[in-house]
Image 1 (cartoon, rainbow, N blue to C red):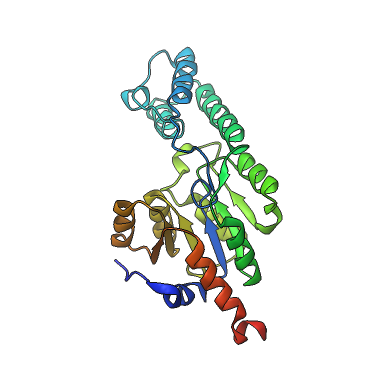
Image 2 (image 1 turned 135 degrees about the horizontal axis):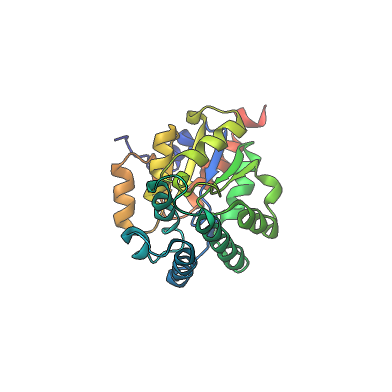
Length: 251
């Protein structure tokens, strides 16, 4: 367990060696689902899957979350002997969830101060990437409509071919690091879930939590988060202070 950072000075020290910030999408960038249930979408996936597979394993049939069902659905397919089950439900589930994301992303509210943070990191010459369990196309569409699409070096979304690679698996983080051609310790992952923290740890990337949930914040600190913030404002202040420092201006 690492020592948590407190205060603007600590955040400046954390940010000083960072050459790229990796953002989770739902939470740090926008409020994608707004707390709404996605059980109806999970039910739609079950209906479509039963058309091909007849019955579903318990971990699939009891899941009531649109994203949560993707992994057990894939695992059910993999548990069966090769050729026993049609792969069609896997593709249909991905199509259904991506369509949901595209629809709700059009009205999702940006996380407060996110664009100001993008500006501050840009001024600091820090590159930015999205690492997310959401599909790439809705993320790109959202960033473009927000006017910051060209500020991101890459969008590393959910692998449409294998939901088992969603966080906490570090796949999207590894893809981001490969695209950036940077070592893991030169980056900082900003996320609001413990799955983000786990993916960062597995990839060797420092993690900064963003949550107003005190229980989750405490657990993030316990599990080694470098810092946990309630908003982007302290990180913006740290980035602006570093950008204004004589050492940065003289580059």
